[in-house]
Image (cartoon, rainbow, N blue to C red):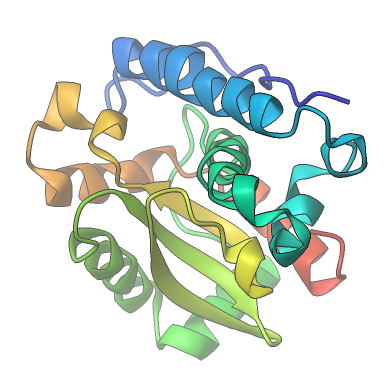
Length: 206
């Protein structure tokens, strides 16, 4: 079964002014769509692989034939990463997390301000294109970054939250000021969705 472009869970202008409407239209409607189209193309003639959830395909990336593996990493990763990205944002949200997620962030990173600073540092220091992540790895929360569209799933990690630091994610509004984008991004983080992902990850269902 071919992968499909997920519908945004909000209008393309819902994240204004943090993320502008045109960026959302291009990012979702062109970039994400291209990842979906290209992973489907790469998997043509591979029905056993194409029938797997994208997360499973990435977890089992070593089983993908070498001839198409990088195309699947680039485009399947792009599909999974962006599907997560739209999910963990919303309009009229932001603020601080609560509940078990907040408790575990504090226990792991000392406090929320330190956690935010480490996410920003991971995003700023990612040379070129990539992502900054909060993942669940070996039962613990960790902050890391990855290049291009590489997915934490490929390393046995569960992505709880990620921020896209490819230039197409922010350049129309922030130009080369990636740190400004990373500072502003917290105002659109949907902590309920992030907490739901964390609960699923702890239960082994992400």
